Amino acid sequence: MMEMMLTLLVVSVILLISVNTIPDYNENDKETEISNISYFFKAAQTRSIQKEKAHTVLIDHMDHKLTVRSLDREDIYEYPLTTCRLKSGGLKRFNYLSSGNTNAFGAVIFNCSGEDVRFVFQIQKGQFRIER
Image 1 (cartoon, one colour):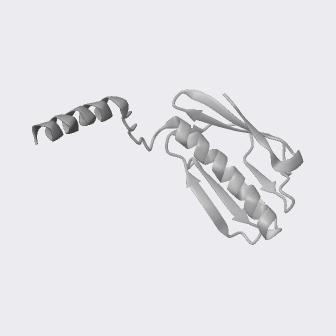
Image 2: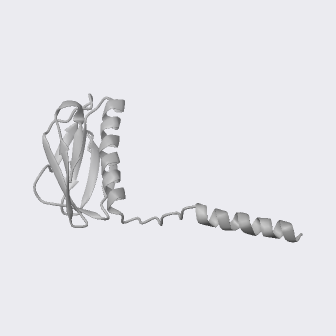
Image 3: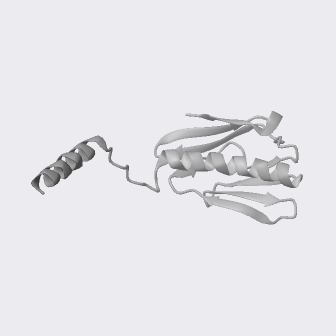
C-alpha cells in the first residue's frame, strides 16, 4: 500500500511540473478583439458570395460598432467593440459585392489599448491587410 501511495505521489509531482498552466480568458484582450474584427469582415464577404447579393458594412464611429446590412436594409450582423475604439477618418461604409470584391479602397482605423490598428481594404478580391 505504501509503495502505491509513493508511486502516486511521484506521478502527481511529475504531472504538476510538466503541465503548463492554462491562461486566463480575458474578454477585453486586444488580440482577441482584432481577430474578431477580422472574422467579422470575412463573414460579411462570405455571406455576400453565398447569397449572391451585395452587403453593406457600416462603420459607426459614434457607437463604436460594425454592422453588416443587406440591400433590403436588414441588419444581418452587428459587432459592438469592447477593447478597440474607432478613430475618425477612413472608411465609413463599403459594400461587399456578390463576387466578394469590395467597392471601395481605404482603411478602417481602430485604437486598441493605445495602439493604432488599420484594416486596409483593396478593391480587388475584397482582401484586407492589418497594419500595426
